[in-house]
Image (cartoon, rainbow, N blue to C red; front, side, top):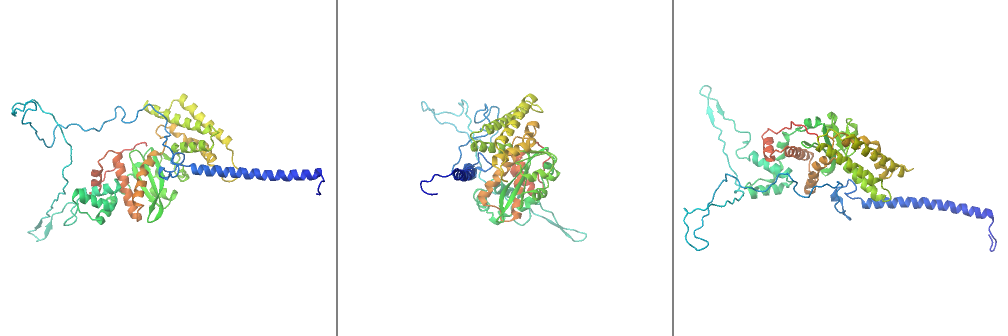
Amino acid sequence: MGEGVRPSYDELAALVAAQAVELARAREEITRLRDEVAQLKRRLGTNSGNSSMPPSSDRFSKPAPKSLRGKTNRRQGKQPGAPGTSLSLVENPDTVVDHTPSSCSGCGTALRRTDRAGAIRRQVVDLPEVRPSVTEHRLHRLRCRSCCRVTTAPGPAEATAPACYGPNVAALAVYLLTYQHIPVARTAQLLADLMGLPVSTGRVAGVLTPVAAHLDGFAEQALRAAPVAHFDETGIRVAGKNWWLHVACTSRLTAYLPHRQRGGEAMDEFGILGYFRGVAVHDGLMSYQEFGRNHARCNAHHLRELVAAGEAHPEHSWPRIAIKALEELNTAAHAARDAGLDAIPAHILDPLISRFVRTVHLGLLLHPPSPNRKQSKTRNLLVRLRDYQHQVLLFARNLQVPFTNNQAERDLRMIKAQLKISGGWRTPHGAHAWLRVRGYISTARKNGLHIITALRDAITGNPWLPTTIETT
């Protein structure tokens, strides 16, 4: 086009068309970049308060503590009616020491013991010096007059060698290793320093195997028969490799299984879900859906994901409404249980469920499916809340079902602490033994048993076995 020559209509139209194409491409690029920036911001802003990440993973921007629980009228600290733990005087002390003044504190006159005016009691609760007690078992041998055969008296089960430690020492070592999470070397040092027992680290390391041998499947049968049970899994390290730890539990039972796999193969080997006919509470891993028909999903996960959705889309109010609806349903479930009701009254339940369902459908309208195969986290959350609505809201329709899967997470929490201390288990056998004993201790504690006594019973071949069935 020469200088000073005006472009023709066709040339202008072609230029506009080319610019329109370029503008459309730019808009697509801007949209893509905006989505990418939003995803990166969301990833950077992900923490334990708006996702399933553990608190230990919070790094650069640790969020201020904020509970997802609704406000209550309870004050902090001890609740009215809860039993106290303060010391009180005992009627029959082990030792009585009398302290008598020799002279008057006023005038200095000598005092006689017969001039009594009462006494003030002060009791000091302390520990005596711990010293090991040695019991010698003499296995007498008698000769038969008829056949001259010599018969030796049988000894107790714990007397396995000329000199050996008894079941109380073994129970204490197991307790320190698996419940107090003290490493092997420090357990041996503690037994030597506090108890006067020079136990070798090899002896301490091998104390779990004979105990675990008596505990094979001690809780599985009771868990299969429970009306409601919790299931979860978390990563662990065994023999330098990534394994999975599976837990099945109620408020009175705990069982663990370390396994190389996370899904159905491990759950089959665990031997609980295949026979379980109650309500399985879990976090939504699809492998659980292959077992049984009754499932309930953890709403603590949903609340955290709804918080994340509200942070990612502050212009939308539906996440806040959905959170409030779930919290109000949970409050109504607690109120119904406290009142001794079998279900939440319909005039309370139906409007809350209707509000939650409408809110989820509103969110789906505001977050339509992406033409790409990969959907946003918000869209995926809403689809799950829609497609598994019955499992999400089962806690409101069946008061035996809890709102969250916190029971399983509590039973896994200290195992993660053990991993931080030891880094993992050196062998699969060691992992199985440690976790089997830990499950036994957890079950014993849930049932109010004295842990050392329960361990001593297991060591002597008479472990306590659960017989009661609880709901959660």
